[in-house]
Structures are given as structure tokens and as C-alpha cells.
Length: 162
Image 1 (cartoon, rainbow, N blue to C red):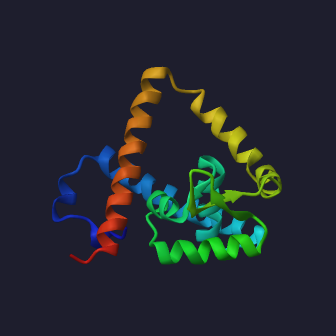
Image 2 (cartoon, rainbow, N blue to C red; image 1 turned 90 degrees about the horizontal axis):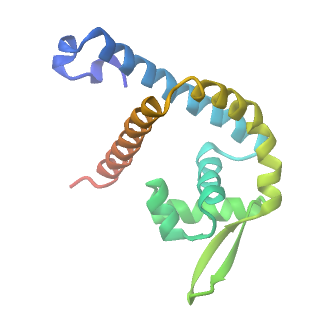
């Protein structure tokens, strides 16, 4: 978000609110760049890498479910799945509950290849979160959950022009 995108009442925000917005912008930009670097190392694009991340965390899902989780269109998700399957990171299998549907499953060897790239950042993250007490962590979790919901809502608004 550039300064041009701030609401007209941005000047009315407290210095702490402005600082938080600045840090959120920094976090967002650095996260994108970090995951782009990981994606490059894996031979994937960033969208494919993050969809694979969703699959590794959720387990097998349908293409429609992956679209809902990611906020992408079903057409985009189909292309992502095609590329991930071709790269050997996922497989398509019949849904055991409904043979007409297909579920996408992460390939365990793919996760084993990716996990070491995140060990250092996970260790560093654990060092940070252990500095907060339970009450503070609940507040942080609530804030991040609301930000995640807002981001998905905003993605859906951009997809649907109505």
C-alpha cells in the first residue's frame, strides 16, 4: 500500500497506528520476497509454492477447496495443480467419498525437500514468540486472524467487480 492509498484521515492516526501500518507493509513485502526466493530455489513460481504450502498444511483437497483456501479462481488453481503435478509435488487421486471428484494430494518427498529451507526461519520465529505471554499471544493471534480474513475478503472483492 503506498501513501497514496491511505485514507484521507491517515493524518488523524496515532503514531503507533502509523508505525503498525508501516511494519505491516514491511512484513508483507519481505514475506513476498522471501517466498519468491524459496520458489526460485524450488523451480516454482510464488503462487505455486504458496498453493503447495496450503496443501501441505491441509492435506488432500479438491481443486475447488484449494481455490477457496487461496482466494484464487478455479481456473487458476487448475493451472497451479497441473504445474505442481508436472514438477512432482502433488498427485491427483479419486475422492474416496465421491468417485466423480478428484482430490489433490501433496507428495511426501516434496515436503521433505522443502522443509529444510524453513528450519532456520521457524527456529527464529520460535525465539520471537517465546518472548510474549499467553495474553499477548492471544491478542496477536486475533489481530493476524482478522488481517488474514480481511485480505481474503479484499481478494474476493478484486475478483468480483460487482
